[in-house]
Image (cartoon, helix red, strand yellow):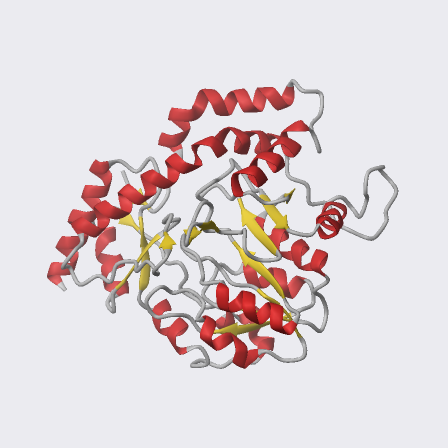
Length: 369
């Protein structure tokens, strides 16, 4: 049986009764859209984080896109972010007519190099959008200071960092706003798409609720400002409600798997994940690095192990963003790491036996290089 970086069937088998009960709860409720499951999940997800306002949406891309719109970021504005992220981060910026401005990353943690941000600010900059990548948090204190000094918004991309903390503070609780994805692979994943946003300001949260519902406040057909159809599905909301109490357990399992990798792969020549001081990593993905990455991945296929790369193409090198005019070499650390990184299997139900098989195959392949 082929081993891949993610799978959910073992987890589903363990949680099957509760997941199916969640579906039945919604189908028996008499309300299939904007119902008690969605509102309940918003309250409970906000309470877990200790934030005042949570607005759910249909996916993580719209969480970023509509959060930007709710904050008033749009055409002609610049948003500072990174290019080593899933493309949706930047797709959402572009969808608002704003311009992404990239800074390079730290070579050890792969997170935004916050020391580079001030140099790229212009009078068009409206928002800083750090990505809490792979399961750990960007140092937001320098960005928070810059945002306050320059009158900028700070929007956290938390799609890969549910439950991650920095100096005890949860991802998503520092900025003006935060965006989450509940795509099935995430630390807190649905059985389909889903997303959510946090806001500190009540009026901005109300604007977000209108934007996800055609621009309507309460009454159907009364559009106050043109919006979108971006509501979180009731079934996914109820499933997320059932899974939220398990989040800390999922994180503990991921950390145990990461520790097992660290022990099993020590001394192999692989560069293992570095955790920034003050961070508690949740290991959404377990990203390692080696200059002979492609040879390693090819050899592992002979062991029936198929891994992936997060991410092989920095966003600024993609054809769809050629209009930004960034040449190869403009983000040297990002580009260099993209040629070396790859992800090992990481999900809470990964068995020790499967993980040992991956570790053993990796050690064998690396020894033969």
